[in-house]
Length: 169
Length: 144
Image (cartoon, rainbow over all chains, first blue to last red):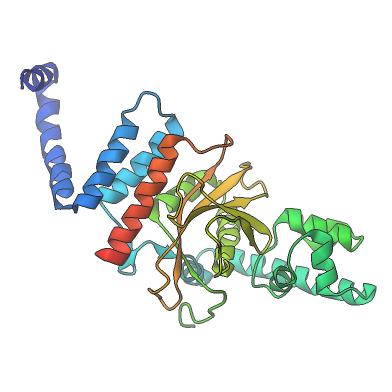
């Protein structure tokens, strides 16, 4: 108890008075949490005050601590569905960017399909050449999955093309 | 178009707010955020029949279970490309209860970060476990 009084006297009285309502709100949020979530808060505080923990881990712990105390919902539930988010953005400010990325994937798929026909290669042969399964090749050619640049380069090499021929740089 | 009408894959991929904040910190441009999102969306093709002790591939990305979180269905997805100057990007994911579908079962993105050492730190493991616990508590057990 003595240490609490000592700390109070060390603090500027105005600061103390200003912080008290905020602290009360946070304590209230904590008390409303289930035991499980209170346990999460406890664990995150331990990391945030651990002098051995690195700064990035402390930042991650802080974000998790805030989410535990003040959860944010999207469309009424925890977290956000990545595909739905993209659809929401499709008609918004970044719609042009989304269409541009769609066009890159479409163009890539069409160019690779043509190259396969020209070389008499199957998707399975291409998959074997680049070290993935045939379904992965099919997904990338049919715009179900965006290839990594590393994969574009492997495909270009397998087709004896420059990767710039398949993907805009 | 109705949201989510074009269902492809076996899972819906949901992102947890702390992971969303991490993505915004890591990506300097909207295009980079979108790139990371589309790579992460490959998790919707994650295989159903995963053995507990195995790693694997999803499309052209590798994934692995986090060894220090056995049986917690929590893994790391490795992104090979450098995005916004960040190499060794890792997406930490949790495979949710397969019985709960909206309309497909969900894979949760718990965290996204640049891995700078071979192993996870003890703090990171504690954070991933806490994030997983929050998802279970606030989505599956006592929904918001």
